[in-house]
Amino acid sequence: MAISRRNILIGLGALVGGGGALVSTGAFSTVSAERSVEVSTAGDASAFLTITGDEDYVADDSDGGVLTIDLGGPDGANNATGFNQNAVTTITGVVEIANNSADGTDATIGVSTSPPSEDPTASGEAAVEITDGSGGTAAVATFYAGLSGNNNIGNGSTPSIETGESAVLDVTVDTTDDVSVPTDASSGTLTIVADESNN
Image (cartoon, rainbow, N blue to C red; front, side, top):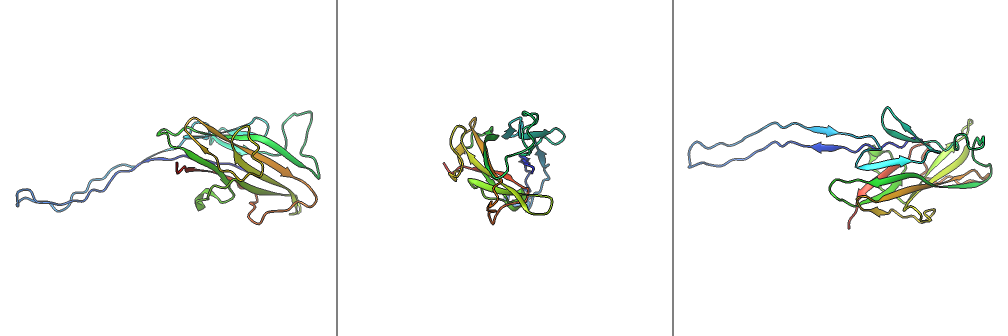
């Protein structure tokens, strides 16, 4: 399950069209000028929307600056190898999302199971199905957007954060025998969505 976020700053040039008469003679009808297009991207740790993870469940792909959530369990935690069977485990603050907008824009933070290419809508929660080797459901991980220190599980919030503020993702991992898989659950993709707040 990978979380990928690229923030793109585009300086667009213009194709200028215009016309007019300068003293009734010597007029021009069109002017066009080419301009360059410049694109800058930043890794998750230094972009306008900074995404950082806790050290137990999130790894940083140093090549692309992309965070990867690994819910296999904390490394070296008393020789732990995974989550309890037939249980629901809650982990808070797995990912922190900070608004570092250069223009002071407030951001509404949410999650989605739609890929970024499909223009996903921010939701307060999104579920990812984790399958076993035979194609059966081993667990359902449900991610919840919210503010740090709040009980974000199941409250359906999409918090609005100002520049310099942060939101977090909490997660529940359901390994119960009768785990219910939501119809909109993804099979391994989670997208963090930041929309401009309408404040």
